[in-house]
Amino acid sequence: MLSLLQEHWTEIKERVRDEYEITRISYETWLLPMNISSFDEKNHILVISHPENLNPNIINYLKSRFTLPFQVIIEEVTGLRVSVNFSSEDKVSDSIFTNNNSATFNAIKKNILDPKYTFDNFVVGASNRFAHAASISVSERPAEEYNPLFIYGGPGLGKTHLMHAIGNAILQNNPGLSVRYIPAERLVEAVVEGTFKGREKMMELKEELKNSDVLLVDDIQNIIGTESTQNEFFNTFNYLYINKKQIVISSDRPPKEMENLNDRLTSRFEMGLIVDINTPDYETRMAILRKKEDIEGISIDNEILQYIATNLKSNIRQLEGALNKVCAFKKLNPKETLNLNTVKEILKDTINPEDNKLTPNHIIKVVAEHFGVKAEDIKSDKRSKDVSLARHVSMYLIRLLTDISLEEIGKAVGNKDHSTIIYGNDKIQKMVQKDKDMEKTIEILKKKLINN
Ligand code: ADP
Ligand code: MG
Image (cartoon, rainbow, N blue to C red):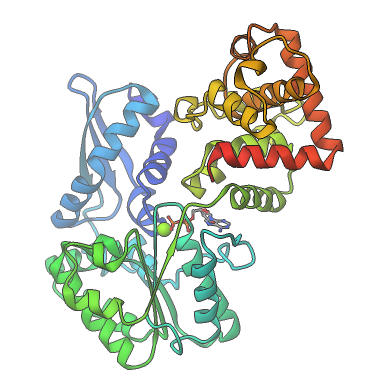
């Protein structure tokens, strides 16, 4: 069993990172260096160690933060139900803060902007237009117009991307400026560590933050409930604000909805501009996939991109993840033609057809309305031109937008056989490629069906 854990160890850590949205810094600081220290095969107790000599406060912090995620992911990956504990291995160095080689220290010291997040590769659509415009404006004239800029929205919608893009653009225009990006949880960690280890190192971080010309604080909701961190942050915030330094903050919700946020902070956040990012519409999702396809230098059939864009609506990270899986498959199997069925198989853990509320009946109803025919007629044997076309379009859309078998599609459109469905589907597929009107009709119908 130990070998099973060891074999999957990297995957386990990466899945904890992805599924629990652990930031890059936290991942590099905490998760990446973790090793399996021991595994008690009888009682299923797994001890995870960290190579730094972590103080008990941090060990407690790791326990509260990672125990459950590890247990869940280990069970998912290996099927083993384990209890998890943490320990630190290295008893030599004194503190993670006095050891300049430690991951934490480096993470704090580095100017951590991710160069891959730029405005160039950020796709703009109705869902993020305002947030994007405000971010551009801040990057062109830091601390002049919108200060602080507060960006909020659900997970995986591009907040972190925009923050790095702001930072990268500012550095490009003014390489001399000090731009600092910090996830709010890093502030909490600094306070936790500072409390235990004496205050000097935390003061050092604070000094560093105060020397920023641009401070980007990501996921501010993570400082909720930690009064001491809020106080530290409030002081830093005021200092920067008074000194006309740009502050950008992101959060998963607007300031007003952060229940435990200090009122002083709420009102400070509200002095600037508050913008939100919503879930992307279908066009934006397609544009994002096309952009990533471009960046990867891989060409994927439109039908496949559409399948992904249709089924993954609420989180761009998932959208990308699905595309990455498909690209990886394509790279590993260059000879195999990638059809929709293969893609459905590759993505079966990502796209759950159960979540896809589209039923054949619903599709038939929408198609019938669109063509001005009756749904019953589509399911009948009537062969008038309108009805036949609506029937073929229904077959095509059911095949594209649902995961049901040809047999079941046959049943849904009135006991047609398998070859009839293939015929109808192919016919519309060809028409879409040749005939602009049909392409448009299908786009409109998809929009109606997918709902956004
Ligand atoms: P958040 O911080 O809101 O949780 P991220 O900024 O981490 O989300 O975005 C998740 C992923 O989706 C990132 O890889 C990011 O590059 C990508 N992404 C988000 N929005 C866009 C967009 N508008 N255009 C291109 N990629 C995007
Ligand atoms: Mg983020």
